[in-house]
Image (tube, rainbow over all chains, first blue to last red; front, side, top):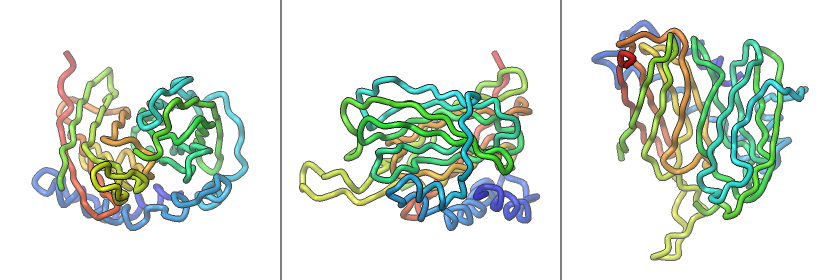
Length: 156
Length: 107
């Protein structure tokens, strides 16, 4: 998966301490990440195309994905969303907003002690299903819920 | 260009709870400048990485749908007092910024 390939690459260059080289040490690997930003998946206008591009297939509905988001978001430009999962071996969390012009909103890869937990804020163009997919090894799990939006955040 | 990154870290047991606030416009390209009536060009963070003592623990890829001035909270197990947590991002214009902070002793 996208984040794993890069971790492997990064480890080749690891070993150099952070400290004095903090900036260089952080930026050098990141440039490699930037080069692999998944343009095709992010620019897909149809959910199915984004999922295909990310290799997310055979999605299994799971009750072990916890989505904390408002039932009604007054401002679509700032919708808080908190995600966590009890699925063993969870390594990635993807956020999709079905009705956004480009449904794939964000992807998070967790490694080396990071909990499969993230809290952030997203933009929603209109009332939509928010779809969360968790990757654990080769398996993919999904949970979704609707968030009603009073004022869309598309133009923000 | 280099907008500030604010970080707040709290150690709970052996887990560091990290809250990050990045100042960035996250322009979608769909917003019109009220003064000129022109669309404001796309300008958004595409990748964000968090490290613990230099080792990546979280890698994020973002679209324009991450809200302006991105907020991210995450948790790292196995963190200790004085461990260094780093954040770095790159946006669609190739602009970049990074910051580090130490895990403080719990109160």
